[in-house]
Length: 231
Image (cartoon, helix red, strand yellow):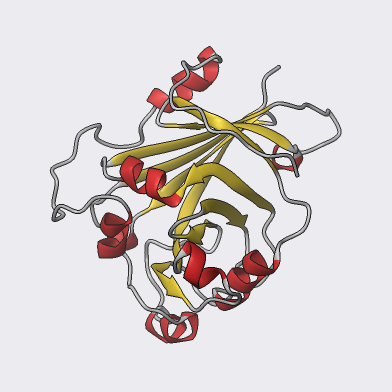
């Protein structure tokens, strides 16, 4: 896989994508009900925080009204000093339908999450009429309106990615730290994750959006993920 370079600030090149990023499903401004600290700490306050996926299964075993069976699961994970990955699943017991390493360090993502509204947009750099939108390979990645680089969708999972998916197999939502499966812990820090359920909205065969469902309807940071394939 070619190296991916991050760019600090690029204007939005696609007017349609820029319009999507300005869209919001709720109030544009929320009162801040979280203590300072920013980043994933806000997510951690929303979700149960455990170091074991198995323990979380028991905690989340009770049915929740806000979690529809048809909801899509999204997981953002990575080592504290490394890049973060995004996995999209229709069923947490099955392999992701979409997996990509974002061109962002965990520290940069934490800074973006310090705001109450975070939007990640992926714009396909390739187009095939025979492929579904999430089957495209090369993506330009935007975070809160800024272009941060390019990524290539994974065809196969790495050992670390497989380790995360296996540990979180029975987890519907949550945030925390996972035991390391390799010697990355010393060099890259601990493996952290945030998993949530998303409402999936299909605009067309060339556009989809995922809107995070906060647990029990609680107010908290808004996270939206957009997929766009230019004509």
